[in-house]
Image (cartoon, rainbow, N blue to C red; front, side):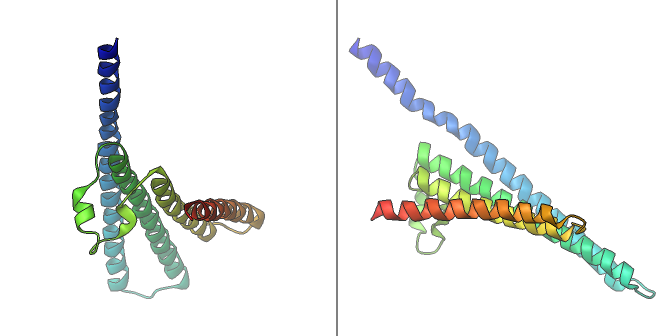
Amino acid sequence: MKRLEHLFESFLWRSRFIVILAVVASLIAAVILFLIATADVLTLVGKSVQYATAEGPRTTETYELFHNDVVGHVIGAIDDYLLATVLLIFSLGLYELFVSKIDQAEEDIHQSSRILLIKNLDDLKDRLAKVVLMILIVTFFKNVIHTTFENPLNILYLGGGILFVALALYFSHHSGAKEEK
C-alpha cells in the first residue's frame, strides 16, 4: 500500500508539468500580439509618410480623419502590447510557480527588472492585475476618443467601472502589504 501511495504521489507531483502547455501557448500568443502590434505601427508609419508627402491642400476635415486614424491605431497598438505583456508575465509566472525557477532571471537581477521574477501566486496576481488595470485604462481612453458624446453617461459608467477595479487593486495590494509586516 505504501508503494502504491508513493507511485501515486510521484505521478501527482509530476503532473504539474502539464502547465508547460499553458506556458508555451501563452508565450506564442504573446509573440503573435507583439508582431501584430508592431505591424500595425509600421502600417501607421507608412500612412503618415503618405499623408506628409501628399500634394495638394490639406483641409481640416482631412486632418481630423487622419488624426483620428493615427490615434486609434496607436491606442490599439498600446492595447495589444499590454495584452502581450500580460501573456508574457503569465507564461513566466506559471513556469516559475509550477516547473522551475528561471536561473537566468535570478542571475540578471541587478541588470533587469524584478517584474518578471515571480515568487508566489500573489506575486503573479499582483503583476497581472497591474497590467490588466493599464489595459482597462487604455480601453477607457480608446472608448472616450471614439465616442460621440450623445450619451456621456455611458462613458461615466465605464470610468466608474475602471475606478472600482483600481480601488479593488489598491485595497488588495494594501491588505497584502499589511500581511507581510
